[in-house]
Length: 247
Image 1 (cartoon, rainbow, N blue to C red):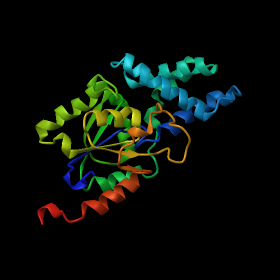
Image 2: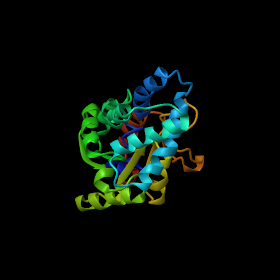
Image 3: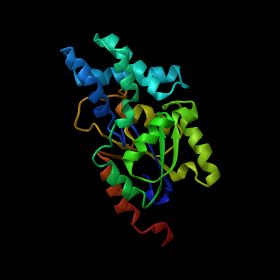
Image 4: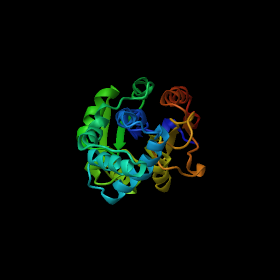
């Protein structure tokens, strides 16, 4: 079992964990479909997004995320047979700057920042994350982006990059807890690297895996919560427990 008292740093996936990216992307795509009286459902969009996005990121690790989004929408429109203009594609490419946090995110981060250094590890570009952090209202110790690392999760290069950059600051892998929603992007590579992680199951009351590829339940970490604030409350309760090893 994870001993939260041994951790110095919480690393966070951002979009999908802190930011409600599914609502954000649907807010941009849905009007396009409604104008065409399309019968495509929200779950159709999210399913194909999850199947396409990681393929593009894997093929083009140097592509900035705004361009990834443009390519994803173009491919989805071909599969689901609806029309998109260049203007609509460009709008979707920059839409993530306006995606907002889940209702519990800001309060949870405020609680967690009392006990840990907070770090973002995200499949994103530098410009977009700068805008997103304005919505989060938390002091982040470090921010690592795909644009900086030249790789997208689930590539283990991402986490190794983080380890290499935190180690000179006397932060070791066993002192890090990774907090994320996506089993595919985050928890599988974390397990491969023996990095402790906690699952924030944002889709606990919804069918399917939404905007991420579906993976087997065996990849679910031992520690999981249905919201970030539940995790923060658990931290506050457990971090104050006496350290019996030192008594």
